[in-house]
Image (tube, rainbow, N blue to C red; front, side, top):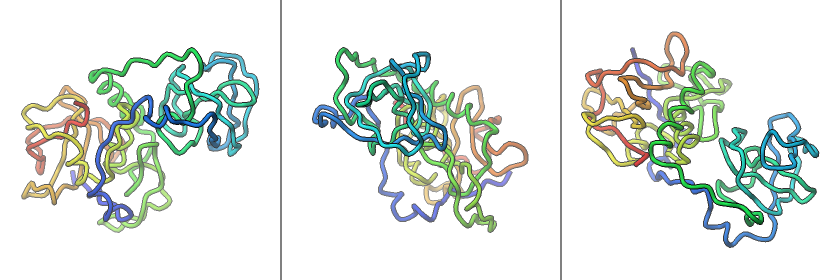
Length: 276
């Protein structure tokens, strides 16, 4: 199998300076938030339902059109929802009444932007094991759903790629993931982590552990024959039981689970463990 490089031209100069950061449930900005905040509905088309309580089973008390601006008077925690901006337990209480999932509201922040609603109880932080399981679940949730796209994908999901791959393929009109974009997505959705944007820079995104100690939730890297960091051209998620989840331009589904061996050509002697 020939593995493709994940170097993305649009981020090549900045990627080396990016670092992994944890996205907390409660941002430090929340304590200093104004009385209200504004956001924009982004559902990619459909109207967003406004609920009487922060669950999808609650009664619908209104709708907001895609692109509409809303005033957020406070925020609370409720049912987990997956939307345009990932998976979130945060719900926004809007000025006109009712709640909308923050997963569909662009506020410019991954944290809270308005005060907590009265009576809100902050949920406990997920354990390391729960984060690993959620990250693997995010990877499995994308299996076979999108094609490989050179330069495609980010923390929020699949995107159009760029031109051109080493073999000259133009992916500017292909919506999907490349291998490092897939890693950005699964770790953000599962563990609330922000990874950098290329496989080479992701090698510096967390503590390195000998591949002999590999465990589920680790990132595996492939390099050239020299097995140096500068030659890294592919990355995948180890999910346990000798298997990895990866995005790769191959025969069959480009986002897939396959058997993995530490003896494969080019496998780096260290894995990266973002969840620790």
